[in-house]
Length: 246
Image (tube, rainbow, N blue to C red; front, side, top):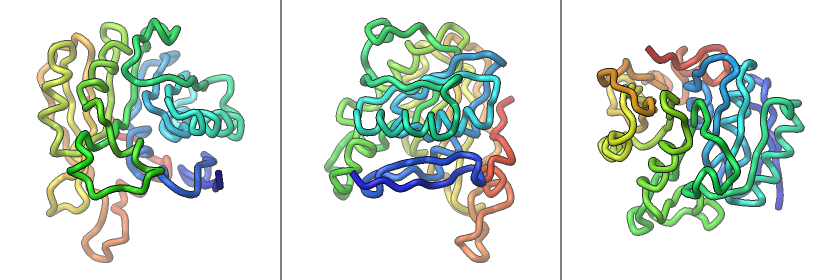
């Protein structure tokens, strides 16, 4: 497997990943920026891949500890390399296992918080075939409900669930989480100020009762010079700002 080493968060995080197939992108950095928990909390990154989300979140949150769960043994091996590469072995670990397994069967206790970037598609016929190496990251044959069920069981009562997904799946996400979680906060992510949101970051609390809050959107790009990030997006990508919750 050919591997490249890349820098995230303005060089504060180094990441080894396969040169072909799924590559870490902006979604991982935004999800890490949305990680918020009390000091000393234990955080699970479900489907962690090579560890981008949990390690970026660990860099941004030096008072939290992280566990990654990943079913692909090659990605697990790279995640372990990345933990060592960034000197985060005291606060981060990874184990091989599938989202959907019982937490007890994995030998894990419920966490204070869980992060997830679930595969965006359930139906392979709805997606114009990604490269085979990207298929597992993009396609979730079991369906989104398997992920949401696992995320709910992965946290203690009062624990938080934070995930990033396609905006057009928002109703499905809320419906799947609602029986056991509440106090929803939703952050739309739009490519431009005059364009519909394509992503949402959803934060929920297990057994939470507070009213749903729809937060101001994050706008990623300026219209003038479409490759240019907005100052807010640029600050997040550099690790100089956080996506705050209320």
